[in-house]
Image (cartoon, rainbow, N blue to C red; front, top):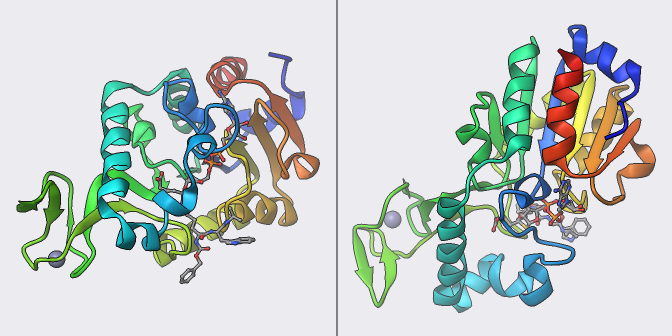
Length: 243
Ligand code: BJW
Ligand code: ZN
């Protein structure tokens, strides 16, 4: 990795307040497929068939098969050096918030403390009738599908296209983006809203926006610094330079 610009290092060594937004790219090196791009889920499946409320209504079995498969992948794999470097970065910073679009829980497993999950968590299930949330298996199973005690189907505890994000989580994320001095956008294609609005807002409010991605995205022209490459290599190096 090219040495980051000294003004980034100076900002991080000082008491800059830091906000981080992560996407599927940070977990790619753990072995979890991303959504877009080569090897991404949407190369072989249509988002409309798997990640919308309409898809679940039409074919809950297909949607659950996909999420159960992804739960298995999350259990089989583990956080990588990129996740661990962010947990270390948090320990150096006075003010630090990590906002993730990922549902894998790897940031928490790597030791990050202040994590907001914009799109939920894949290990949780939520009743589509009464909203009851559970982490483990359901009370009742019928034909291989999990049901709540209220008799409605459980669904994965994630946010699908066309669904609102948690208002409280989103409000806090906007406040964080508005007030930070350094904003990192890491491993996200920056096309899914409202998450993609966060680095733009930080930029408008004068933050130093650093993008880490192995490819350019719609955010790149607006980033103060674009560190091109793998998050699992760039982040540990960056953290080493700060020390
Ligand atoms: C590496 C790397 C390495 C690889 N190192 N980098 C038209 C315009 C604007 C908006 C809309 C529109 N039409 C519809 C909308 C809204 C829609 C949206 O944004 N659509 C766009 C796609 C067009 N958004 C929504 O529907 C959201 N809700 C909403 O708007 O609600 C409004 C509302 C209000 C009130 C009532 C009702 C509604 C919800 C969005 C939910 C997204 N859900 C998913 C699935 C979550 C659950 C699950 O995991 O199954 O979230 S879709 C998927 O995309 C997932 C991700 O979190 C999200 C973002 O993807 P991400 O993380 O950026 O991954 P990739 O794969 O896209 O990119 C990976 C990147 O990493 C790439 O750039 C690589 O280069 C890079 N990379 N390896 C560094 N080693
Ligand atoms: Zn219920």
